[in-house]
Length: 341
Length: 77
Image (cartoon, rainbow over all chains, first blue to last red):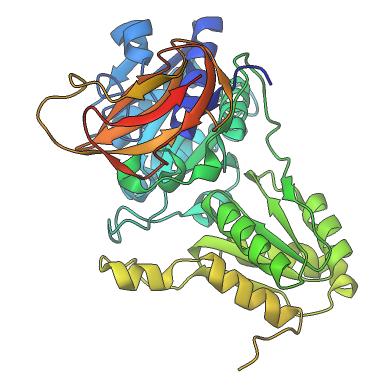
């Protein structure tokens, strides 16, 4: 085997950004603590040293201001990569995101493109409470005009970032804190993968199947994919063959891959760390039931975050979060193989 | 002859312990001298560990293990 070169998602994101900055002088980065610190989650490390303060701009705590500025810069021909440090902070700057960034191409009759990337951290599990732990995948995916991606591993993280920067449309790049390889948030070893040095794209809107199976389909994104893979391993020991679908993109959503998998297995479990109601999990289930109801051998199930603010208390937060045990229990239920008493 | 991978004593100030947050090469992988092979973290600051030699990596301390300055976390042979 050639020299192995594994990266964390944080490093993979930084590498993709640096390569695009070398290739394209229009690409620049803005956000809070993305310069000297290299990002609170490590995903802009090394950029300031290589590209300097003109192209790597630390901003004040003024999300409306710098995200609005990025929209203007993008419309004027630049390729901004902007960070909203925690997705939970979208409340103060959402007008710039969903009214300007997402809609200006449409409002201008196609006269302007808004080729920007808004990267933002998601997820909890480390007792950071209700304003620093949300995923909010559904909130962004619900609103038209922007693509939405979220990687589960470093290979996809690099390829999706490269694709996002090159995309002529606005892309929301959501990265889960528990997958970044930053120890104080916990580290998911499965997210640290071999990454080629050269630039490459992972197609936005194309799901992956990291594990094939025949009895039940587990659909998820980001951290949930790792829960699904762990559950699939346990289920295999119990005689149940689970297929895991990693969505990678929510917008566009790869409905074909979801439907094809359920057509094969006949059973569907959606794992979503975002809130239970009115979100991604319901959309995935509707994707199957609207067109492929006859494929289902059992009602679909979802393992999502309960519709409550995220607790600070560790035991309460862990109780609410999706995990492999919950998936195993759901899979045994839909496969009619309940644990015997 | 194996070359030990040791946490340098000047990697950070003070005597705090650290945790291995990532191995960036697998046990048994071939690695080149100078390659980034691990990240360790102390007090929310991440430090890089590079390969002291070219050869085959043997990991002694796993990810998430607590380590101190001077500890041998693996070797290259």
